[in-house]
Length: 366
Image (cartoon, rainbow, N blue to C red; front, side, top):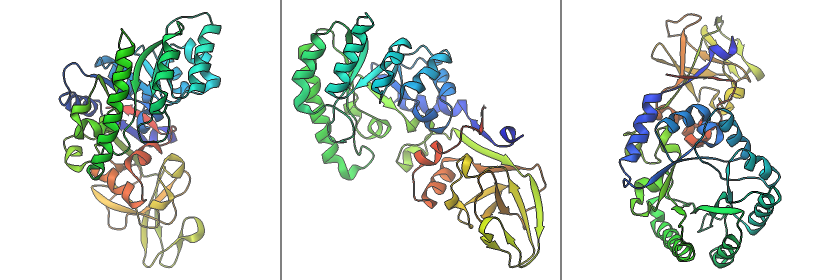
């Protein structure tokens, strides 16, 4: 019953709308890579990948090899870039026709040797350069040595060179972002001069597509924007909400004045109170910080505030002034505005709130 009581609805029309919105911002020749790491930002990577594949996007990206394997096993045949492959998984990655991001001489050399050991040739690779994020990537002064290694090996084939912007959503950091773009252009020039068959070059994420359209290069990486967010309110309003998290009322209680509710007796009733217990908790992604009347759900189009502490599998809400019954629908969120509001209340961002949604919550395409 639990898996059917709480559902995350994935709106296919909204995904198609958002994809079209960003496509319209691109040059016709610019390719699109859809990012489906972390279960497609908390939704469902297989579902999003199948929709993307049907829409003829050019690439998918995941964080880890296991995520890519799951997509291959689901019948996804698009090229899949693994953004943070682990050395111990290189052979498995090759077996499943995944394409690694190689970001250091250690990973580049180890991957090359792995392909050679397997007796293969021209396995696709991608190279990441660090232009200011300082997370992963070769340094700018590594360019010549990296080029030499790639040109001297027949076991690998360079598919793309890329970097990642640190603050593309923050126009107060425009000078820094422009510096990153300039650095990447220098890297691009070196590779173009060195290779007759030129790789793809890509730098922009969702906010980059919006704020730095002249830096599209050959491909862009569409992540949070596909799911309805653009880190900028006016753009988010032009996108459609993809995810709706809903549940049902399991039980209604009448709690007398002076009684307590939930763990640690965190809520004490000041009057006779009607409560509803909902089968969703912090194990499903509802932060405990939303308890104690910080967060709310919607029942019969009215706010029902969470009282007491959020439990692992349940939460309780005050429905004293709501005409409702057991089995009635409960909306946790169904709009970008509500998701943003919830995220702000627990001092985080929509990315984290969405990726917290547990995999035990049933996904349903609508």
